Picture 1: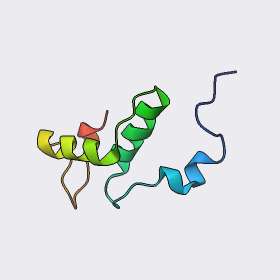
Picture 2: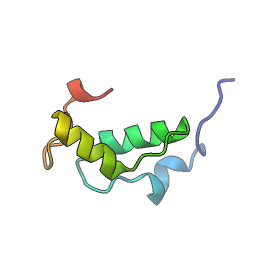
Picture 3: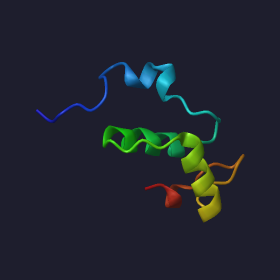
Length: 68
């Protein structure tokens, strides 16, 4: 069986995985993936970097082309 990262059945329902803004789901997902690999960086830091790089627009979110 493949390994399960996180808490199966709970992580998707937890307040701990919700993004801070309604349009930062891609950024929050990135934060969670990085955390699973031992890289601790805040959603706010990733948000600021994404704005600077043009990957995220406040109020507009992240386009599918800029995810990943």
